[in-house]
Image (cartoon, rainbow, N blue to C red; front, side, top):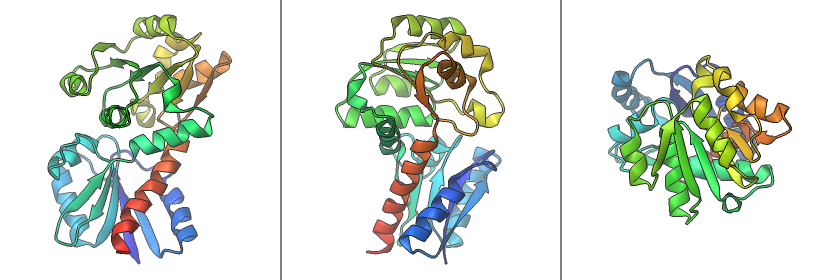
Length: 258
């Protein structure tokens, strides 16, 4: 039986095992998918080495370790979320964030190219991956980033972002005032998965005219709930997660079946 898994922290409620096991069954693959909770960044290197020794064929990486794992394996992309075993030692890496995100939007009836503005809430690994995906695919909307910390501003500037602000109710209201039906707002913090539903910010999105995408799921943030309650359109992160799982398995089995 082949072994795969998810590296992250606070991941006990993740739906990834269920989704991957369904996909394994559909592919006729005898495999298991495990949750690997890593308590601190200092334990990541040993965890990756142990997974390789234990014969894991592939791994997913989630919050808060996408950038840390990229650094450990010498990947220059800045944030990755999928690894596959290299027979010569170590791991090959990719990110499925972009294709998963685009697939999720398509389920809701949208194309990335339809939006003339994108507002990211948060500045972590998922945002870096999505910005890189937009750049590589020639999608050039006006971009704003509202973040809780400025520690990633340099990496964001390298990807062409010039408009930053603190993530507050006031900054959200300012973005909502500028928004049209062609504005995409992306809640990309992991706060809801760690017990903060962002209810203190929810009033800031009231009246938003565009499409709201929350990358969290079960639970998503109160921002998405407030937007929907006022008649707005949006989705949580489950469609993206399902699409990412399929693309991860494509990446894993492309190597395994060579």
